Image (cartoon, rainbow, N blue to C red; front, side, top):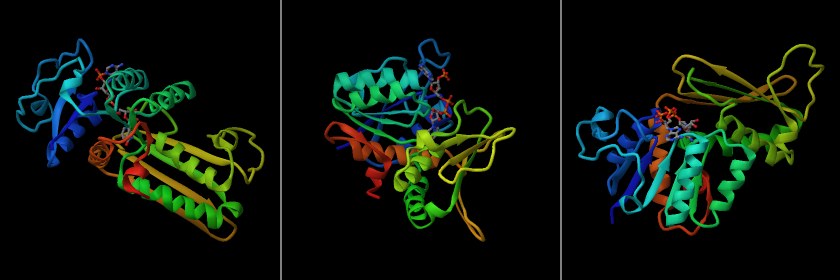
Length: 265
Ligand code: NAP
């Protein structure tokens, strides 16, 4: 049976790749492509907008539950919460790529997951999810004797920092070491910072140009250091992963799932 997928934020950087990825996968069909109310693109052909040629599906601003089985949402926290509410009301699964949620917004997502299946990941690429597992091994082997730092770089348009992926990397390491990331995270340093506390996990952020996404976790010991790096060169890596997650999510029981659940790692 064909899986019908709706894409919100369709005209965004990720939205366009998501439409392309949905159209490329056999057994998956684009059911709706949603843009902001009042968008100048309303009524335009969604395939043409992505430079893929006409697909006959016009951009709309209203979600219709009969048009899709699973929604893929890479928008903004406010828009995602509204879309999660819609999916929970209509019993539809939702794949969430948006980052930058507050603790309160995360609690809303947890509550919605009791009604409908959600798959949420700060990064839907297969490689980054493999990196999370590699970091758990590194933390297990070296974590207690290493100073741990995470450095990330993204394009100039990114609005949240550090990236959701960098925070997920920090969480994977902190959880393995039995530390609470909220207590041990240090976001940037300036001035008389004092000597480094071994238990902290440092984050540094670079913003500029068209960098799709680069992350390095460093385990710095006396005499040696290990670095685990992931570099994304195309947003298609995230889009393909999100479509794979949509296929996996369809028909699941309500709950909050991750990309690592999808990949079974
Ligand atoms: P973007 O180019 O700004 O696209 C966001 C889209 O969402 C735009 O089309 C925007 O519409 C729409 N939107 C935002 N707020 C809205 C609202 N209140 N109502 C309706 N539509 C709204 O951003 P992007 O680079 O695609 O990234 C989107 C999100 O995905 C970010 O949170 C980013 O960090 C995250 N991301 C996650 C992954 C992952 O693998 N999890 C990978 C890449 C990016 P307008 O253009 O009309 O404003």
